[in-house]
Length: 280
Figure 1 (cartoon, rainbow, N blue to C red):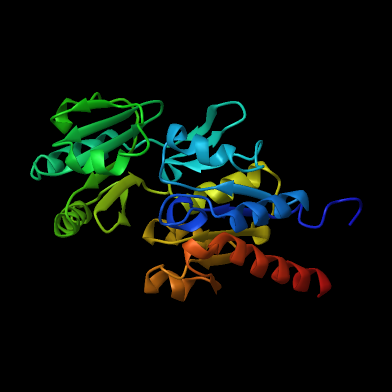
Figure 2: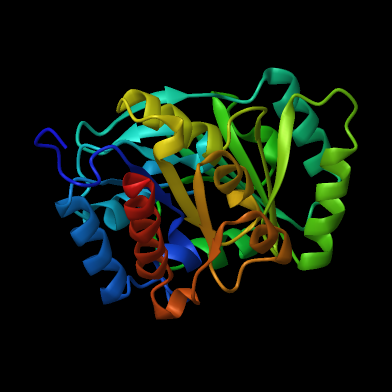
């Protein structure tokens, strides 16, 4: 191995909510230990989340992964938590923002969270966004109407509401002819849009390139549709036991439930796969 640690040529990315963390948004001890062991053996581990950098900092700092860039805002950004700066940011086009605002105005009972390069805005009635952010106390500015939110580098827009409303607005967003954005179901009560090509998967592969890691030495685990591109692009993929059918069919490995240490389970599977690769 020429002095290299066993897993130094590998990058693993993990979603946070209901993947790395359990359903209570707590980090299971078995996941922490597994990440510590993997990194101690030379592996690179990072997070890939829809959260903005502020909302990811506490989760990132619990892990021994300083120096490895992370995927933020669902892939709209890549962030260096050591330097506390964005390394890459892909905003929505002006046409995409305008289309989204026009659709949002037709759904006055929804909430909207807009992540920009350095700010977070909330618009709408406030109920759904408050529920989402109730534990985080995230820094944000509030506007009753989405059209009043300053148009400055919108990277991601999340539309929150009852499940049936989320489906309606998702359908409306997808129906825009010639749209320049991707529509992603991010939870049962939310839909989000980002610039085309700006997703967790492409961002993880960009991080691998930054670190000099080959595409066939990448791995990732997630739990929902917003992780689909990520587990599709990496070489070895996993999902949690609670993931939708489409993710389970796409993933190489279905790990245990997030409450039981899904990331630890996946890293155990991955290390066995790496051993087999090295022995072939």
